[in-house]
Image 1 (tube, rainbow, N blue to C red):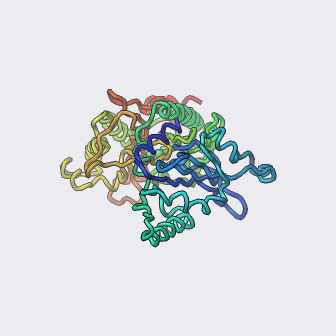
Image 2 (tube, helix red, strand yellow; image 1 turned 90 degrees about the vertical axis):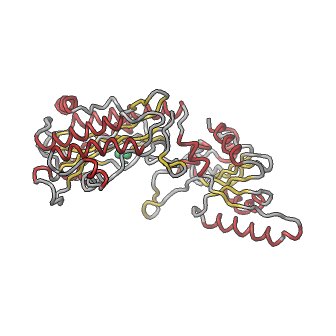
Image 3 (cartoon, protein in one colour; image 1 turned 30 degrees about the horizontal axis):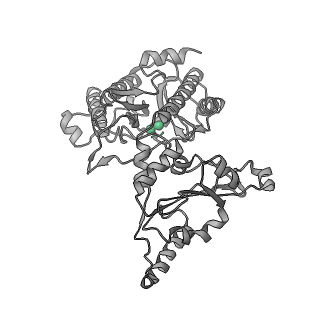
Length: 431
Ligand code: GLY
Ligand code: MN
Ligand code: MN
């Protein structure tokens, strides 16, 4: 799988090209402790190498085509931080043609790029590497009278790699299906635990417990558990408040499995029954999500998905008298923005907001089988929204599912988590 992707990248790079790909290094959390290591998504996609401080060199201008620079084996260091594949492992287990100690990389770099016409490299990640590349190119240019030709261009390889990542292979979709199933289990566990008097962090805890218990790395992004008006704060991650009866709780949580994210939101009544304004807002978002899901087909676009959600939200806000006027005019004037201020979909994959361009030649990009995206309309009526009737203030609802586009439509990977109001009520009441 990884080798196939490297070959695809090498083909796309064309002849006389070298790619310098930097893996993630450890990031300090405080003093001398680090955050848990998480490999750079592109590096993982191309190498499957899950250890800090590696650099991959892929080339079409000479053999070998695949070289890894890695931290060497070191029994003393490994006693503290665990196993490293080292140079031997990089070749034996990760299919590198050759491997060297990372400490040799900067010294080797001028030779690695001196014969290439194109250097594929992401500038701005490591100033020493950037400086070495630019200095080498300058040095080669100075020698051009001796018949030396310096590389003509430094190309950002993400253009190629991110297009590859956008269309998921069957094996990737399978992982995402499994990640979705674990996130489903976690959301259901949280719904069963939700009750008046519980704290937001208790729901977060059962969700993240389920993620780890099922062997995932944990949450793919900071878990959001927002009770009542906390649900109107899009990136609320404090999760410290007590949940009360007659309020909704909005939970946005997804696990990361083998590098792949799931991204799911459910909103339901803490007391087990939707009532009054909460039910009314929920039903509008539920219908908006259904309208959006109906647009998830090959040839459709994320813009069409969003337009479908916005139309139903504007109609609903009109029905609830939170807006007044004509639907088309309100949409044209974006009058929904104080209530619905984000997009409906983003790509999903190794990154929760995954890579790949959203437009082709300036137009919204047609969806193709293998693309994975979220469908996540919402309505958020902040306490401070003076324009809204008081009854509706402090209500935040989002419903978010993960879909993969198929030849005949889409597969909803997170369908197992109830969304319909009566199903959610049954789940919350099932303690
Ligand atoms: N959880 C981040 C998002 O929904 O986009
Ligand atoms: Mn999302
Ligand atoms: Mn989300």
